Amino acid sequence: MTHSLKRICLAGLLLVGISVNALAQSADKINIVTTAVPFLRISPDARAGGMGDMGISTSADINSQFYNVAKYPFAKANGGIGVTYTPWLKDLGLNDVFLASLAGYYKLDEQQAISGSLRYFSLGNIQFTDAFGNDLNTGRPREFGLDLGYSRKLSEKLSLGVALRYIYSNLASNAPSTGSAYKAGNAVSGDVGLYYNGANEDGQGWHAGAVFSNLGSKIGYTSDATQKNYIPANFGIGAGYTWVTNEVHKITLNGEINKLLVPAPPVLTQDSAKDAQAYADYNGNGVVAGWFKSFSNNAISYAVGAEYMYNDQFALRAGYYGDSKAMGKRSYFTLGVGINYNIFGLNFSYLLPSGNGVNRNPLSNTIRFSLLFNLGGVEENGSTNRVY
Image 1 (tube, rainbow, N blue to C red):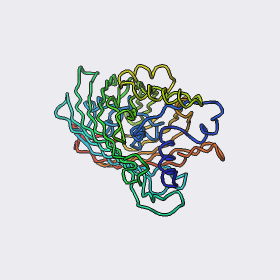
Image 2 (cartoon, rainbow, N blue to C red; image 1 turned 90 degrees about the horizontal axis):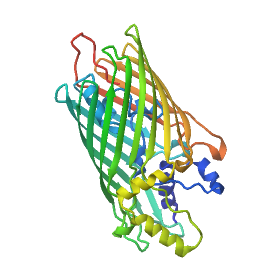
Image 3 (cartoon, helix red, strand yellow; image 1 turned 120 degrees about the horizontal axis):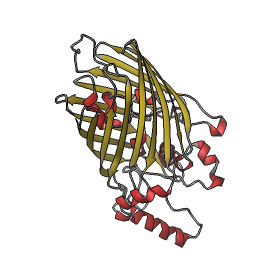
């Protein structure tokens, strides 16, 4: 394998949760549940990034499309647009890998909203080489997901949302031929979410959410229909509570759990014939069958987060994320701040370094920053709508 292809594989493995710590524990025969297009599992906005990468049950904001599209009918503003940039894997010295996202929504009335988003993940410039280290052609691996959503209230406290997503993944279509003709992968998926908002007019009360995300087709990178891979289908639930003091101080605590709806790959037995048949059977599973078989593994992640908001203008955030061995056994703390001024908002989040030496988390020092623009104007009481 050339140095360039190793770089692609390294970035992919890190994205799907195989941290250096998990690799160091290979003697434990950890069977990591992997998927294609793992960039869809990255939290692409700074507010969620500061709260342990959670967003299913938090209050509605401009970037709700990435977590639970059902939240939009409860947004305070009539519409908004948000842009986020995340330098990725900088702790490994990769300076040209990044995730960029764009999200927006518009409320048709008090009951319903339309929304959309774009996620673009770049693995930087790749110089392909042969087995002797001689330069060949270059490539620029990249992926993106484009989706549209619709949501509406079912009652004063409950809403439903759906989204349809197109996924494009071009990882090695420019790579030198090694016997297999690589091509860009394409897939279609959808989200279905529910959101409960039991808060009063001041914002105090319970809020909860549940969502099925990335339910869709497999994706392939060759013309061989038997070699298609699962995309990261997921089921998540969460709940939280907000306390309001003097209409100025607000504190929110949230907790969420996610289950990856992807079956675990076969465990290698060192018998080539048996292993080949096991992988053929695994790849031959249908998408729906794979969802049900996923419950035989413990590919689960969880997060807790807190947000303090002062006068709807200044926010402090903190969170913790962890997942099971089947997802790489990662864990880390996050911090975040947010500032709202008139119709503009700016959020920052930071993933704290964790581990030492070979056990250092390669996602340490990850920074996200989001710019938000509120299209909703001013509320009837004269206060500016929140943009988060």
